[in-house]
Length: 396
Image (cartoon, rainbow, N blue to C red; front, side, top):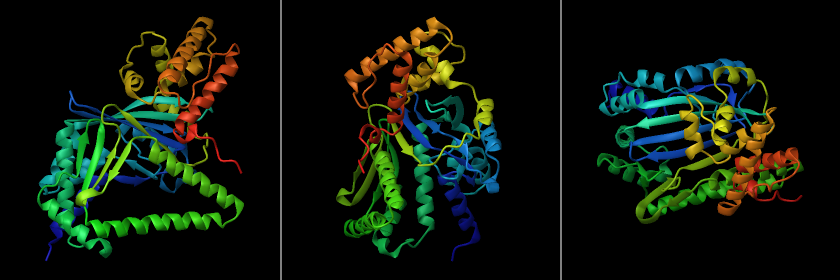
């Protein structure tokens, strides 16, 4: 019979794995997550871009402006469009007091070796405000090791599978946990997860899930025209999320493996949320952070800027469209020389992009600057939805 103490440890561990989730009212139009592993420094970096940040209008869980200020002040961040803010400091304080060594080690690492820094705010070509944060986890290999120990402890605390249809797989997972299985690992710049499975049981489990998805799409096709359009949009959002970054999956030889990201370079996962933007947090975000685009544009045209280290990180390995957005604004500057510099830089970037990347195609130089910038706005929006943004919309 289990005592109350291990049960409390398990609850604390679950908090440590998922971090501490607190409901909020912040919403995003989309998010870009760039992953980079600096092997020389043994650091794991996550660059988070929040596109189209706004308040949902539901104040049941707090005020959006207050949550923005708290996030910057306390090093909080948000993943995807869950109505959650992740609060590492509160998590470390809550789970650090547990008597379970695996939980203590993970909490200690988060508290001492994780930094969350606000890079700045930006406005996209459609005027929607967003923000960027850089999360750095030092001693990355040790962090992965402590996370694996914590996961194994949580698994061993639960005797039965949550779903009896995967009971054989669950037993294999428990056996692996007892042998200190490496659930998470780094593969170059990529994150990799491996889980033992019962091959035939797993095949049935996969088939069941895929058939449910297919049934939902078929049922949507029988609905009204508006529902059909929504179904097509949702499908494109799913496809974009699955194809924007390198994702490798395998379930051979009794092991399911998922790898996210490229091994040789940083990569960006792009997720559209399908939410309608509301311009109700512009003032709050502008006050809470510095202007990312202003610094980025100056760096792009070769000017020296004080305290530009974080922005330089974005320029060096962040999403490529970040280099364009600030230049677009600078190209409309009152300073004619500065505007001309920005246009020339855009032309050079576009020429190189079309030589090496190609999708979506960058605009060709144009005599009409405004027309040129509008074309770049289209390119930028296509990049937010890449690779789906490079595929023509289906005709009705």
